[in-house]
View: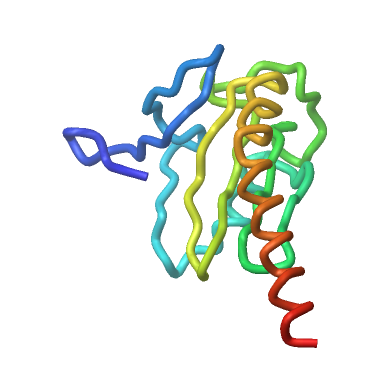
Length: 133
């Protein structure tokens, strides 16, 4: 995430209709302060964990879907700030990067783009396990 030219908001890569662009993080006032729990901030803002895809090693993709405060909304409801309905945390080696997807079709496209990396990581770990055994 990066601050804009005024340093007032975080911009994240956002995938919408086949195009990547930097857009404001969909949680107003969000801070990537390392002392703040990222998952708790997403939950407080109305995102719920939708799915998680991980390899046998270190690569994990966690998808968050916006459902509104308290999780009482619908993924078909528009985000109040016009923000992305899906956030995807890509985690590896103890760190993470968050990207956004405008809607379910865009989220599926992002996951499909990461599928080869997850598959390769799984296959590599199986090969390593068979050599060790």
